[in-house]
Image (cartoon, rainbow, N blue to C red; front, side, top):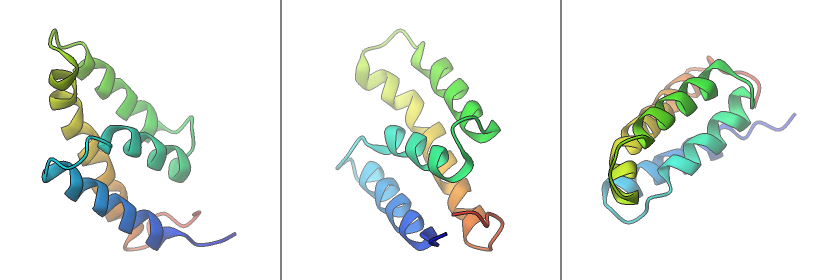
Length: 93
């Protein structure tokens, strides 16, 4: 199996920076992709993120309001996953 952990870390960091600099709103779909690829589509990590996104998405605001509430959950998921990859806590990549 190919170890693509560095690519996931680099892309995750880019997505976080782009969101924080208001250059992109891809953090939510990227987080879903990252967790699906790394932990699996039925993983507790992805299910937890989806639940958090759903709760945040129920905000009675427009699309940008939903992103406002969903983005912190997605950003945290990406940051946490990077922190698990870096010291080798996740070995199947």
